[in-house]
Length: 64
Image 1 (cartoon, rainbow, N blue to C red):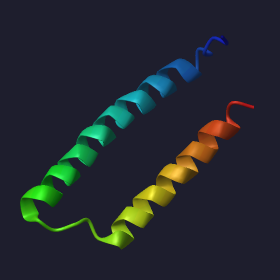
Image 2 (image 1 turned 135 degrees about the vertical axis):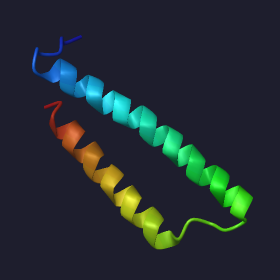
Image 3 (image 1 turned 90 degrees about the vertical axis):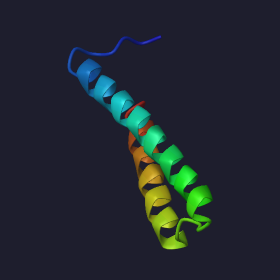
């Protein structure tokens, strides 16, 4: 397995921290959906999903 560079290590740690926070926020959205008995608007979902796809593509490109 390849080691992270000195420059990549803090950046990856920050990304992992942001992803942990994003998971918590996503769970809060789900909780609110149940409590409010109101689904997340489709447009908001699509916007977020598309951003996640872009992040995936960027990260995948960085592995090459």
